[in-house]
Length: 126
Image: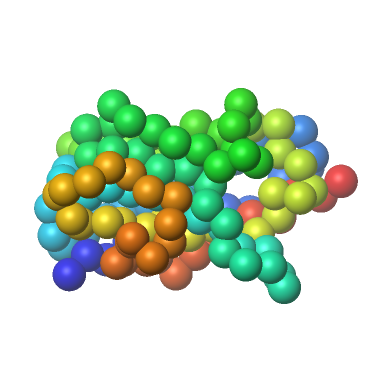
C-alpha cells in the first residue's frame, strides 16, 4: 500500500510560482510511475504531468506545457511540480498519484493510477 501526501499549495498572485511536493511511503517509490492531476470546482479531473520511475520520460497536459516541470527524487521518495507563470485558471486542488505497475509507460489517464493523495489547494489571484 502506498500513501501519498501533498504539500506546497497556497495562495499566489498571477504570474507567480509555487512548488508542490508529494511524499510517498509504503511500496517501492522508485519503481512507481508518478503523476499530478488537478480538479477545479465543477470541472472534471485534469491531467497535469507524469514522470517515469527513473525520471527519463515526462509528459505534460496542454495547460502545463512550457510553464510546469515535474521531477522526482527517489532517494527522498518525493515527486515535485514546479509551477511558474501561474494563471487564475490554474486554481484547483492538485492531486499526486502513483502507478505501481512496472510494465507500460506513463499515462495521462487517471484510471491507470491506483494510489492518490488527499490533494493540496492552489489558488491564483488575478
